[in-house]
Image 1 (cartoon, rainbow, N blue to C red):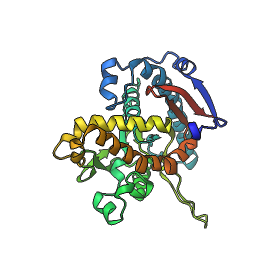
Image 2 (image 1 turned 90 degrees about the vertical axis):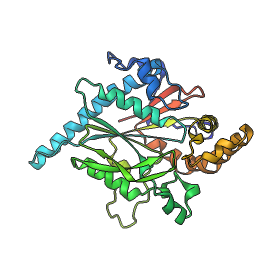
Image 3 (image 1 turned 180 degrees about the vertical axis):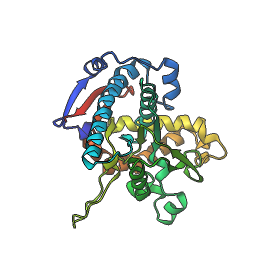
Image 4 (image 1 turned 135 degrees about the vertical axis):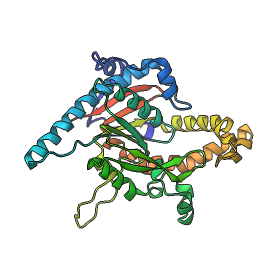
Length: 316
């Protein structure tokens, strides 16, 4: 996009009209109230867009889930044992403020309403950030969200346990209010049919050892990956817009890590938001997040109006 224009060579691209037709006869199981409840603070998705974008996507995912299950059955038949059914893992990646949370929540709601009523869980990678005490000790508080700020070994272990069919696997919980991992709270993922994982750097492969020793990355456990894309200047505007809304709401909570920002004047708040965006989030986007876009199975390209204007599906 812009200076980072995507080379679509490995992808099939679709206008919204072309993509919407791929819905076929997939029924819409959400209403306008559901969509309004699921969308994030400043992500004004409409019911019409949910139908045009996410119904074709859930139809595609149904085929992928069926295919992966067939491969698993073939493998267990070859090995001569009845392996436990493993969850289908969907990854949702993209920049801060691009709308990952809304996409993940709408997908979960639609997938749960398939005729088979699958169990669909959602995990964000925020819980796998190192606690603030560790980040401060390592001088990484200004690098929060960068790959080194995460406990990547713990995240990979979590996904490995999920994919091995363990009946109950826990993940740490993160509070955006206190801006830290909650040490005494965990969420439990218990035998989902589908797991959606949402985060900034989930598609990052990392360094390969020169010895050729086998090594696994988080992306190795993802069966289908989605990258949400938008122009840098648009993302900055969305980030500032969200910051200003939070200044009037969550930042005013006495427990908020960002309580001091609620007292800024409007001009000071805009300037602060832009500084945070450019020094942390834009740097992370350019260095770590954007380079993973070409690894995604599906790219949803957003315009300034937050709406998805183009879809790109990786050729199989």
